[in-house]
Image 1 (cartoon, helix red, strand yellow):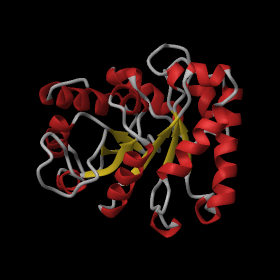
Image 2: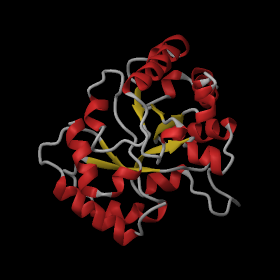
Image 3: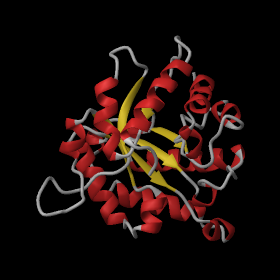
Image 4: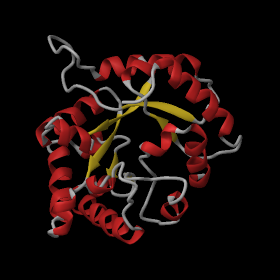
Length: 240
C-alpha cells in the first residue's frame, strides 16, 4: 500500500529512464488499485513492462463494497494478478478456499495468476516448510483443469523473510523450488515446464544477482526494494 497516482506516475517516468534500452526481461508493475489507470494511460507500446494487480475478488459484481473484480482489472489494462499473498493470509485471514476462488476468477478473466505460498518462521523451525507450501499449492489449484492454468506462476515467499531484510539462502530457496516443481510433476505434469517458480522475500539489488544465477529461480516478486525506481531498475537489469 504505497504511492498515490501522481507518485506512481512519477515512479514510472524515473523507472523508464533508469532501465537499459536493451533490457530483455519480462517486468510487471503491480501498484495499488487507485494507480492502475493512471499508469495505463502513460504506458508506451514499446515499454518493456506491463501491469498487474495486487488482488481481486472472486465475485463478478454485486453487493461487495470495496472489492475489485477481474473484469474491472482487465478494463484498466491488467494482465496478471497476485493471489494468496502472505500479508492477506496473515492480516486479513484469507483462507485457502478464498485463494482457490480468486485464482479461478483470475483465469476466467484471462489474468495470469501469481500464486503465493510460504511458511512462517515457526513452521520453518519445526520442519514443516514442505507440508505448508504443498498444502497451500494443492488447495489453491483444486479443481482447476491444467489446460486452464494459462500463465500461472508460483511465488515462494517465506513469511519470515518478507520486509525483514533477511532473505532466505539460495540453497534453501532451491530446495523449496525443486520441491514445488516435483509437485507439479506429479499433480500437473502438463504444466511442469511452463510454470515459473519465482522467489519473493527481501529481494534487493544486493542479493538479486546471486538469486538469478540459480536455475531453480525463474524470477522475483520484489516488494520493498521496488519502491525505489532506480534500485528496481538495477534488479531488472540483473535479471536481463
